[in-house]
Amino acid sequence: MDSSDFFGFLESRSSVREYDDEPPGTDDVDYILRCASTAPSAGNLEAWDVVVVTEEETRAALAEAAFSQKHVEQAPVIFVVCANYVRSMSRYGERGILYGLEDATIACTYMMLAAHARQLHSCWTGAFDEEEVRKILGLPQHVRPVALLAVGRGQAPVALTERLPVAEHIHRDAW
Ligand SMILES: Cc1cc2nc3c(=O)[nH]c(=O)nc-3n(C[C@H](O)[C@H](O)[C@H](O)COP(=O)(O)O)c2cc1C
Image (cartoon, rainbow, N blue to C red; front, side, top):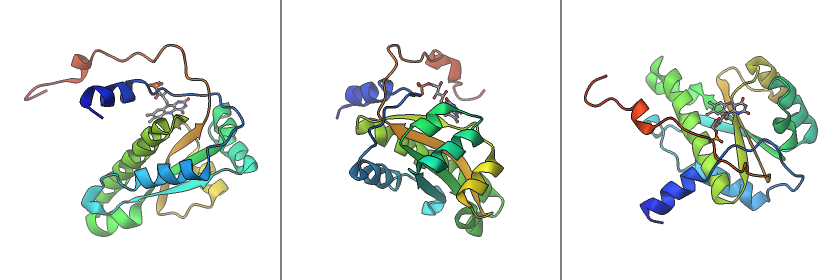
């Protein structure tokens, strides 16, 4: 893949919020998880974990916790990506809170792109009631759910989402 293929790959992904019933295969799920495990992490501590949810009832409960976002129930797989503070804080103390969130976010980004590489669709979902998600999945206290990544097969939107001109983000040498 050259740099222009890479850019095309990134640019052609967009969030999908309607899915059909055909679930990704176990090989797709394994591929996505293997890709996540190649992600960089602070001190190589890999302070992230993921709960792979396929049960219909659990997806419905997660959708409720995500303020009734239908795609969370409809997508056949939800990767609940979590920061694992025990891993990051055991070495980095308070700073480990930030590192745990960063590690989880990078892992989730890799999963989202891995899904795209398998011609699957996804929607990163950050709006949810954390306490509800904790209860539904039985998460321990040292683990914080960061994102619900919905994955399945759907219809990509006709027009890609627009972005700010890149220059809007950029400050050179100082702010
Ligand atoms: C941190 C984060 C939180 C998000 N939360 C939600 C969400 O709760 N519901 C949703 O439908 N999309 C959510 N999205 C998806 C964004 O709306 C989407 O990425 C953005 O509009 C750009 O569109 P694109 O992904 O199609 O390029 C979230 C994305 C990120 C990165």
